[in-house]
Amino acid sequence: MSNNTQAKELFARPHGKADAGASSRSNGEASTGARFLITRLRVSHHFPLSTCPGPRRTRNRFDLWHDRDRFIPMLRSRLFIRFGVAAVLGGLLVRAQAPRPPAAQYDEAKVPAYTLPDPLLLADGHRVTSRKTWERVRRPEILDLFATHVYGRTPVGRPAAMRWAVTSSTRTPGADGAPATLHKTVVIYFAGTKDGPQMTLSLALPAGKRAPVFLMPSPAAWALHGFGPNQALLLRRGYGLATFDPNQVELDKPEGYATSVRAFFAKPGGLAPDAWGAIGAWAWAMSRAMDYLVTDPNVDSRKVAILGVSRYGKTTMWAGAQDQRFSMVFSVESGCAGAGIVRRQYGETVASITRAFPYWFNPAFKTYATRVNDLPVDWHMLVALMAPRPVYVSTAVEDRWGDPRGSFLAARGADPVYRLYHETGVGTDTMPPVLTPVGDFIGYHERTGKHGINDYDWARFLDFADRHWKTAMRDK
Ligand code: GTR
Image (cartoon, rainbow, N blue to C red):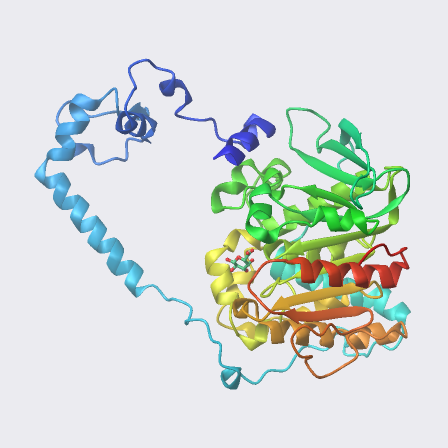
């Protein structure tokens, strides 16, 4: 996969695995796919070589293709076939017996009774009645709870050696309602060196002004599937766009850790129970993007909004909670572990998400799979960490996996914290009808259609940003 290759090139060798197949691929002998696959396979002396004719191998790893005279008869031996069949059957049996999370639940009548933790109740039992106590005591407490039990602790801030290079800057003239646009590419070298971890930020900014900007984690493949930014609309309405591919920071798969920034910055001794997961790494990268954005003369750094769809909606919430330089937060269909009440166990649950994507979270989170009511947090508390900044949670009717009602309840559950600032959050206890945005400082809507982000969403988000930032509105 190209991301994989890219990441291997980007990340320092000691933290990535060398490509075991590379040398044999250039070997003129290897021409067929099967030969290539066999050549890539390397096994240790633990392989059951007693079934294999010829002298027993010692500790050294060896290359199966070059040992094919011994390897192929071994594959054909009856004992080996029996062993293989038994192993497959055994594996199927173990899999069938493994505990599985129950099938997704979509019946509102079956949502269990639950009590949400009170965002304004301090760990010592006292109530928060002032902004000061919220900011100095309760907010840090909640942030710490999410780090300890869900996303993990972010072990590094901005690395001292970090630097960036603007590798391209071009201006396109305005046409057909689109303003003149400045396109920039900025490479951020996290460790200060070109052979260390890095990410590429792509910017499209209205030329000749300091513009408010939407920062969005957005792999190119996602954009192709309708999960990407609407750059033309953003520019037409006076906003800039900054995007990056989170896969540069950590590939979105269980093996992604090896070449990730998490591995790069890891201390010896393995991952602690509260170590950060991939969401933590992606959120960290958003803050590193912000380190650059605050220095760009074409960016109004007091008006940088972050927006993420689905898994990046979760990432965006965690980034907004940790880094208050982001002045507006949009969480699009982020559902479980993004902006939905997990105690409802509707659609995606802690059990299902930690089974499918354990590497997104810290190792502790999966221990709540069967005891979700023991979690000291629920996601109204994460929404509350955005206060007093404007935050928007959006959902879609057909995205039941993402629990639209649970997301409304998470948004509404943050209202008491916004009241400390004398602001109205969602401002209603009743879930609004479809296509009816509600809320003042906490926006919420449920639109028609499937999981993703569409023009309806973008138009509502820009209306919300216009209202809070009083941006000059262009054609709507
Ligand atoms: C799903 C996952 C969701 C959501 C979604 C996405 O497979 O279960 O939590 O993150 O992916 O990112 O599109």
